[in-house]
Length: 221
Length: 221
DNA sequence: CGCAAAATAATAGTAATACTATCGATTTTG
DNA sequence: CAAAATCGATAGTATTACTATTATTTTGCG
Image (cartoon, rainbow over all chains, first blue to last red; front, side, top):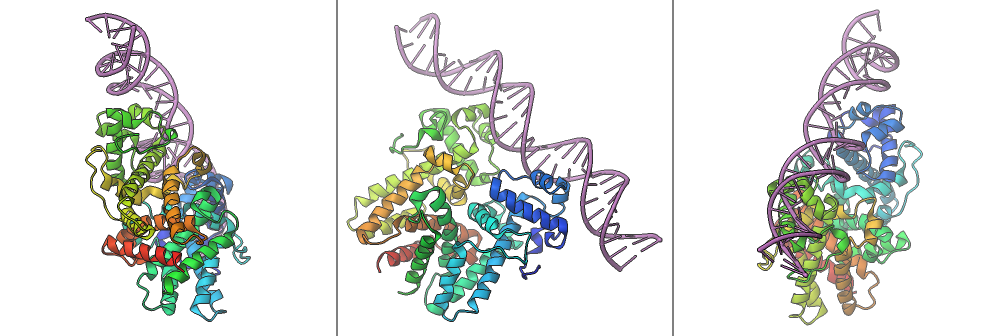
């Protein structure tokens, strides 16, 4: 728990990094380095060196790099969930809410001044580049039991409920929003790196249009 | 090139594994072990031991594990492309072809007796569990130039062309089929491991229905 | 058939990684 | 103020992902 009431399963850390200065510096530098170097090239040694601490210091907060990545991505989903809840209060129809949710999934957001140690834009870029790595492992079933993917599942559930308000008979709400959430990430990646897998090489607005079109056409039959 | 005319960029190997007995044993055992252990746990040493060869033997065919994975996944896309071309000859309308393509993406296929060293089902399972790892790296742009992702892009292009036959005005054919192809994989994974991200915990037929529904609703407006 | 060239096996070695363990020193807290 | 938690510093280990070298076997071909 922190300023924004983002809850993260206690299985995702050894010692809560949100509660200490060192922990917050680890989070901050990890996001920066993971965005810059990518998950594979990041090591706890590099993080430790940059924050003038030690490898064992980082290990006291996270058991390994995979747990750290999972923590950060869950933080992102939790934060997005909070943003959505805030914005939904200003909107009336479920359709407007879904449209806004898709924008929040894709468009870059402003730095939240209440959480200076998290660079939201860097985090967002990092999530686009790394998110499937948290579940594409042989430990997925065990880690699922431990709540490693609650953030993703929660946001998928929220959007599914909205979809059922629009069309209570739609049979695939979870599949739909898992697909939309995945596509929101992968289309950003493809637009930048593999443009022949996208029609939106230019602005993120085009990705928003594509996803919105796909969502609404699926729901209204 | 092999019995089935699947072409794979020469940048994806040091020595063509398809042309020698040792090479084919490497492919065969790699698929088996990658399916069983997952990408991270696979090592060239383990492959070598199982085929009674040596680590350096495997390195003569592939520069590293990532290149091997990319080779196998391109082989899969190439093989799927061949299957689709065969099946499309029996069908007339683009809609029928698209429906059949989605089935081929999801449903398990029979072993091809002409290629005894490739276990297609194991390969298919492995692709579901590992495919984004080939492009989610910091080298994606360089590797893209070298043709690492041609198989994926080719299949996306083929399906996009079909979609434009149905609706020439549809503005997002590449995004649509990149999304459908990704969802075909991720929904299989979610149905098995993270069922709250899917509505198809039972049969693969449900995934086919979901994807077909999404595709056709997107195209017909 | 015999020989050169290519392919493979066998072995060794290296740098980096992903941890684990220990031990004072310092800070926090009850 | 004493106990406990925290942190920094250092060392060490098993594994991994290669690279290099040499010896042996297989194979193409004149």
